[in-house]
Image (cartoon, rainbow, N blue to C red; front, side):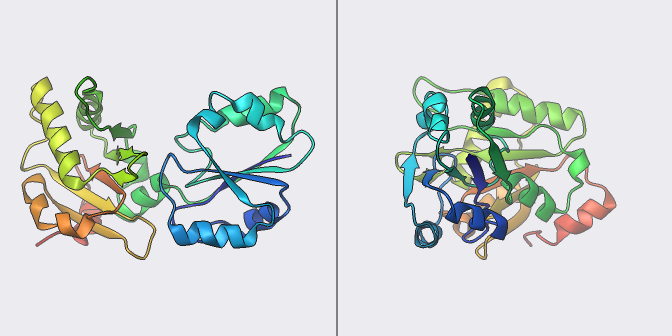
Length: 256
């Protein structure tokens, strides 16, 4: 039996049903390359799981999916995944592989940054275009497709949910200043003139946690809130043309 268990956004976001199933697992694997779990959450899980928890990397779930899933043939294998196990990840590969090998599986869903950020923003979920990620640039890797995604969403009068990259080795999240600079640079390279100083954005950090921080402000004013978002995993929402009801929600987070 294969169990895909979502851990949500903060410590103890795991559902009661998932926790009960987890306790019966013979082998427990946990991935932490899509985001970083709070240390106290990991300690809590280890205290609840008799089988112990083994950390795994992306290659274990992608390149070696066949071998990883095969471990569930004669025992119960639980794979712990931050957020929701089937949102914006490649974990569907595991379910496909389980089906090929004739292994039963169960998925335990949990809060995701996608639902939490959009819900907390007060913007209409039906007005969001495709989400996209701003990746770190390097000397030989400077993609700009994310600014094209922003342009298309704005052209279609759709809100944009922008995910920010993280550095797995150093375990650092992209800062607000870094994200804004990359958006500015990509905008300048494409000559789109959309990510301007006067563009209003919704910055969200530690969504779903007690340390959550949210600010709605113009790009030119981000210096006023950078300290508030330091060290937090961030997302940025760029509203298209908010309705009066949506503007009322955004006003709750306005920086004055």
